[in-house]
Length: 139
Image (cartoon, rainbow, N blue to C red):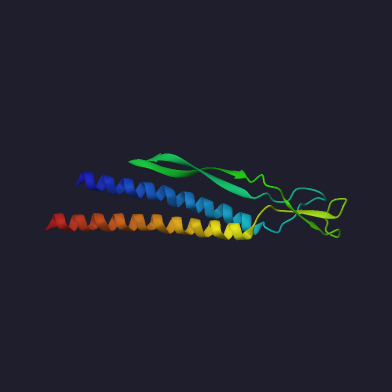
């Protein structure tokens, strides 16, 4: 019975690490979407730069889970738009806009949501299996 419990706890610990990592990923994506149309505070300055979560394998009770190691800036080019009246415009009248594509962010959010749901299902299934096993052992 101890073996069953330890395997179940390991499964839940691994899935819980993934839940935490996906929550962090969703926070980063929400930040990117929130800043998709922000501009620089000063003329010719750089606007918000898209952030990308970086995951790494990590040891958890009974196995290898996942954790968000860092959040790195996306080094792709900024978009530019001609808007000479904007306070953030450079000397030529161009405004730098964030390198955030809301469609890409929406797809990333959907993927993070699906991964989160899948790991919730792992936890629920593990609990149900443990409960059924205990019911069988009691009889």
